[in-house]
Length: 155
Image (cartoon, rainbow, N blue to C red; front, side):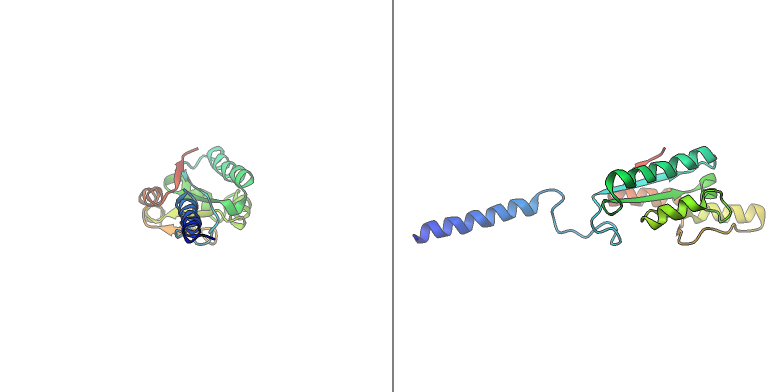
């Protein structure tokens, strides 16, 4: 084999590899969420409404997306603030649905600013479901997640 031909084959192979590695979605980057290393879709659902129908809608959207994308390929977080925090109260009627979504990898975050306000006005901090991510300010957390690449949906 001619040395020039061998060089061209090696150069061509390296160029092909460079193109594949630079393709969107194939770069070796840190995952947004290390617990979901294969996730390709990053969704943040906002819940700021205490209405039971709105809470049901948000939970249904999360469940439908898990079915559509498969739990390992989608990273879903539901961020609650204002009246929406009632979804995460330990005595909420939807606690079993929340637990089911959590078992499939959905994260729930709660605004501590809202809980502080509830505690100041009622004299007691409500008991929350387990494994809830506390965030200092719900809306600020949403902005941070958007900057990290999450898409915000407000059902």
